[in-house]
Structure formats: structure tokens, C-alpha cells
Image 1 (cartoon, helix red, strand yellow):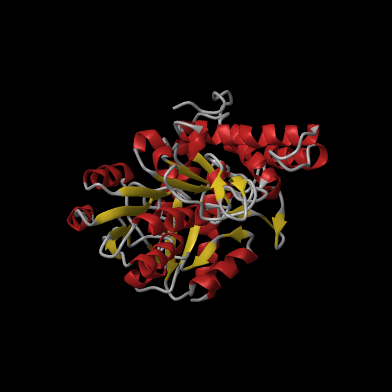
Image 2 (cartoon, rainbow, N blue to C red):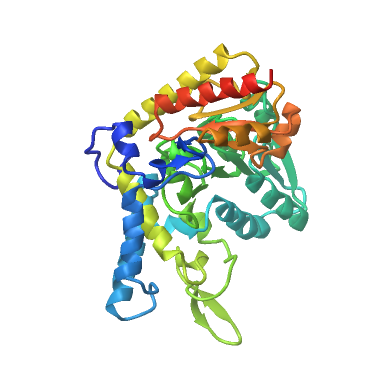
Amino acid sequence: MTAAVQPQRVFDPYEVRQEFPALNQEVNGKPLVYLDNAATSQKPEAVLQAMMHYYRFDNANVHRAAHTLSDRATRSFEQARLKVRSWLNAASPNEIIWTRGTTEAINLVAQSYGRSHLKAGDEIIISGMEHHSNIVPWQLVAQQTGALIKVIPVRENGTLDMDAYRQLLSERTKLVAVVHASNALGTINPVKEIIRLARQAGAVTLIDGAQASAHLRVDVQDLDCDFYALSGHKMFGPTGIGVLYGRESLLSIMPPWQAGGEMIDRVSFDTTTFNDLPFKFEAGTPAISQAIGFGAALDYLSQFNWEDIMAHEHKLLDRARELSQEIPGIRVMGDSENKVALLSFVVEGIHPSDFGTLLDHQGIAVRTGHHCCMPLMDQLAIPGTTRASFAFYNTLEDVEALFRAIQKIQKMFV
């Protein structure tokens, strides 16, 4: 796969973390240990500087003006699209659609492709570990079209039941939408096999890459998926920007899902013709600084050998798993060997929300609750979990600090 920039830096997490300003602070009188990366990641100085440069020197709308500032803004904006195309190994920049995030990208496919191509009796397959953002849009489409939703079961170890998936597939299956990596369990699903089987059945595939894209190098041509959705803010870029990769042959036949400026070719009071890809799906003024910031995040990530980053994150997860087994009263949810760096757990006798508050008092930031996965939590028969999610700037000392804090909190409840 071709990256935006060839790796040129030796990866050192201690050096890297110094380049993320938010990590170098105290919270509640304690050094911050940020373990809520599955919710959003911190931003390197390079991203902040790229966005500030736009606002200071190039602040103008894109594509629409003949002046220099607009030209510079447009070039930076479209260069960011090219960086995403390279990062994902998409065949063309026409296949990269800017969205506000993964949620909007999935809704775009649901409302444009789903409403125009699904009919009564057609089947949509999702999984039992989906985020609400990959459940509710399909429920709405099913209500609008008469299509039916089928669910791949989740096994006790937190992996998908692939035998059940094979049984669900049929000539009625028209779309398969599954998460690449679970935000609640960390499980990395066998999406390449899921896509292959769906294609054999004649179904279109959408992969929710919100969690996987921050931990894995994604090659959409290798996966052979039809759609792939991701969020910039989980990949060390800004909030408010995301990407829908879509196979050009499908995007070309899909109707616009939002109307306004930029997505039009010609408008009269009688009819409207629409712009070419990718602009057909980008109505209105886009998130210009956010796209530029996301491009800067990809440049930053491209400095490193991705294998080194993944190896470091695996060390963090392995150490967290070891320590969780050494401390009585901790139950880890999801025991798949193939996981992103995320540990979701419950502590006996302590509600997750209380536990998260007590960790915050010690400067440790985690996420608690159902993680927008209520059906999965219902299956697990729990109200929620405490989720510690790691990024490449976390260290083994962060992991140790988490479990020292866990033991300290447990002693308070004895």
C-alpha cells in the first residue's frame, strides 16, 4: 500500500507523547493518563498548526472564488482528499467523500443507496456488536422500504458466529454492514471473509471502520468492500470530519442525500442536474479546516512504520490483560485473541459510572457506560463497562497507573 509519506522516523512513544499538548497536563492534581482514545484521540501539534495556518492565512471558501486565498484553501482541501485516497488505497479521489464522521457516512449510504435500492423482503445483515450508528440507520431504512434486518450473533468470547453468518446469507441478502473492530469489546472482525461471502451472495458491503482505522492500516481494494466509513477525530485529527469511501461504480448511481450549493451542476425552477463525484455528496460549505487538519494527521502518522505502532499497542494490551488476571474481582468482556488495544471490564461491587469518576480523581481518563452498544450489553446482562482504550502515545507506565488506581479504588469498597 502506498502511504502519503514514506516512514522516516524511529517510533518512540515517549518522544511521540511530547508532541501531543493535551497529554502534558495535570488533572485533579495528578499527571493525566488518557485512556479514552476509542471515544476520541488527542491531536499532535502538527494538526493544530495546520488548522491555525488555514485560519490565519488562507481563510476562504473552497472551489467558488477566483482570488488567491480561495485558491490556496482549495488546494490544501483537495490535497487532504488525495492523502486519504492514498492512505486507504482507494482507486480514485472520486471515491473519497467528506462527511462529518462515521455516523454521517453510514447514514449517507443508508439514505442514498439503501432507500433507492432496497425493497420489501430484501434483507440487511448487521452484527450483534454494532454501535448504534450502524443499527439505527438501517432500522430507519427498513421501516421506509420494507426490508428486514438480520443479526449475526456474538459468541461468549466476543467474536462473531461466522457459521451463523453463513446461514443468514441468501439471495435475499442485499446489504451487509458490520464493524471492523468493536468499540465495546475491541474484537477485530474477519471483515475480509465477511466481504467475500457477501459478494458471493450478491450483496453490497459497508464496513464501520471508526475504531479499526486508528489501529490498523486499511486497504479498501484489498478488503474489496463497497463502502468504508471512518472518523478523523479517532485518528488524531479534528472533530467534525470523516470519510466515506465508496466504490465509484456505486456512488455514480446513488442519488444525492443532501441538497444545496456545491453538489449541483445547473439549477432552474424546473429541474436540477448534479455535480460530478465526489462533490455530488458534499452539499454546502465543507469542513475546510478540519479536512486540512485530518490531512496533517495522516502526514504525521505516515512518518512511522505502522508495524512498530501496532507492536507497541499489542504490548500495552497484553500487559493490561496480564494485570487484569492478577487482580481479583475484575471481569474482562471479550476474550478474542484478535483485538485492538482496548480493555473493557467490570469490577465486582462497583458500578462503572462510579468507577470512572473515581479514576478521574486520580487523573485517569476512561469511558464508562454502554458505549452506544445497548443490544450487546443486554446480551452480556450488564448495564455497561469501564473501557480503557490505548493509543500509540500511551506507555506501559500508563497501564501500570491504571491498575494501581483500580486496586486503590477496590480497597475503598472493602
